[in-house]
Length: 305
Image (cartoon, rainbow, N blue to C red; front, side, top):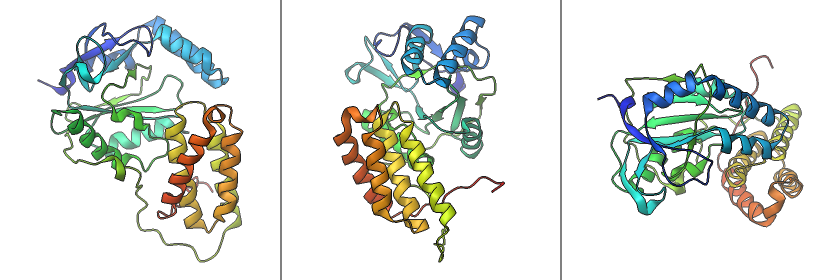
């Protein structure tokens, strides 16, 4: 039997729903995203419009009322929690939120990783989602997390990987993406990893420049300012990835770390979403900023620059 024909569960009525509504195969999920019903196309259009105008409340309301979600990683009975896991599936969910050019990242990861069985864009077209095939079916929560981090260790080189999906209970919302990618011949990975080494990005063979490029430095500050300024969800994960990247940029481009940290602290304190838990986010930011200094990261420029 093809892995695309494995069943898992789907849920209605929003993120707080814990009782499954029924079963669905991966193949059926794929078809519902590539060719949804007309009423779903309209729902996705409204969600995209709400996201474009920055109306998070309306966006969340529409998702809760109009979309269903699935849990591809495990079967639950009677409700969606760790204590109710009946069996695992060899699937891991990986998501990126609030990223530019999400279609490019979708296609790049799908082509690069042959264990990626399904790749699609989010309803708002500001993120992308992936289902990866594991080379073995997890037998415990710890086993699942080890397989998940084995993949994440490679994927976290790209900014804003959502680490909450280390939990097999996490929901995966459906979407509308006619250009979604899937493969029948995915080859599962058995590489295992652990949380403590999941924040080490691949930087390749980097030669630190001898001279400081003032234009690059300005672009680095603008990038970090923009990334923190637009955070309106998944605060912890985005602070982790952004501050790690910020200090990596400092290490590579010779940027004054005190000036970069002052910018980060100011942007966190003045972000409406992050200001609700300022001290916690600043503590996380400081930890990741210190770690990132050991991993120089070059500013990625557009091809025409």
